[in-house]
Image (tube, rainbow, N blue to C red; front, side, top):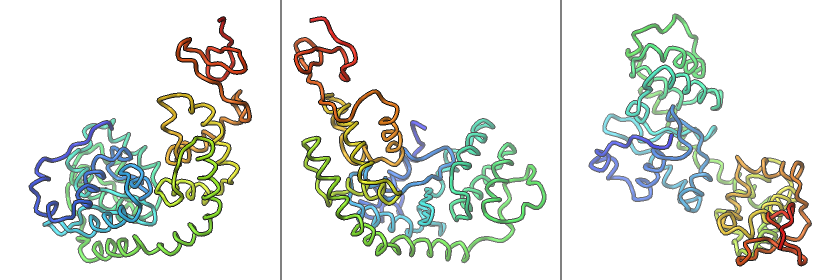
Length: 318
């Protein structure tokens, strides 16, 4: 979605105003995040938030802990976050935005299919929100959500979907959420250990990127977390260097694209493998010298020969 519904009463909310400035900023980010979807529950790794907000990871984790432990007047939490799956949802957002028609409901089912198939408090909250919407075309979505909760389906849900659960979640729900918050930073030592494990590799890649692009990225910056993430997934140092090579060759002389020669773009989880595959299918050779740009002739040149394209495929008559 290109836009989200935000209630203007948020600014006069006592609970919202009671939070720190960082927590309020993160809350607004979670409401309008580009990772959000029709179902209003989505995967958000803290590293993604750090890159989008241009914050250090510790700052994100601190604000996330605050918004997920701050209660609304009705006792619910402002935000629910599942550390094991990185699923997140802003409480009440789905009720405000709604699921307006059967096509949207079908789209929500597709969104759910792409999310982790596990029992999570996020799905419990989503299930309750869909019940409160009380729409007959939400039956298939409710069935799938209930399957995620690991409960027997029982009788078809039928039309009266607005009834609450037979037993309020109450203390059980609270215990689950508190446990999730306690786990938010529980793997801090593991994360630090993995960072130390890849310290040499990270330094090598940062040095290589700076050398190739003339940049000055620091080895301790938030940007370097994207390098560690790809190394943890099993990619090699050479894989990362190849992507640096091919995108530097492609983007370095382009005023618009050259600014994307940075770790957060090159080693982005959604794009990295696609960049790596370009080496196999692309006609470019990584080791070839980059072409130079002549602003007067508006042509590329190398070794005294002019070309119409930056890859040197089509010669120009000069």
